Structures are given as C-alpha cells and as structure tokens.
Image: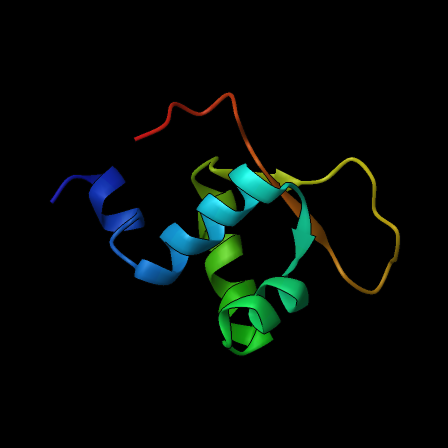
Amino acid sequence: LGLLDQILASALRNRLLGALRIDGPATASELARRFDESSGATSYHLRQLARYGFVEDDGEQPSRRERRWRASHARACR
C-alpha cells in the first residue's frame, strides 16, 4: 500500500474526513457522538489526518478546551 492508502485505510478516518468535507468543522467530541466512537479515538485519528494535511485547525475556535477541525480542501481528494 502507498502512504495515501495507509493513511486512509481506517474506515473511521474516512468517515471523519467525509463528515468534515460535507458538514463542515466539528470537534472530536461532536464527531465521536455522531459515529458512536470514543472522543479519544476520534481525536487520535483527526491528529493523524492533520499530520498528513487532510484536516487542520478551524480558524474559529469557540473554546480553548476543545479543538475544532476542518477539512483541508487544498489537499487533493482521493
């Protein structure tokens, strides 16, 4: 598998990225509730997606407590 395939091999990562692309910015906790996952799992996968440029911090952070994420649309879609 290539790097792109390895990064997106996780079904949860694909769902997270799809949700951010379609529905816009969200926190790890919001996405965890939506997909019935732990916030720790969604947070981990969002950080992995950010590491490779698929997601980034949203410009509007309503709280210092939780990071809001958005899809990096500059990154080519699969």
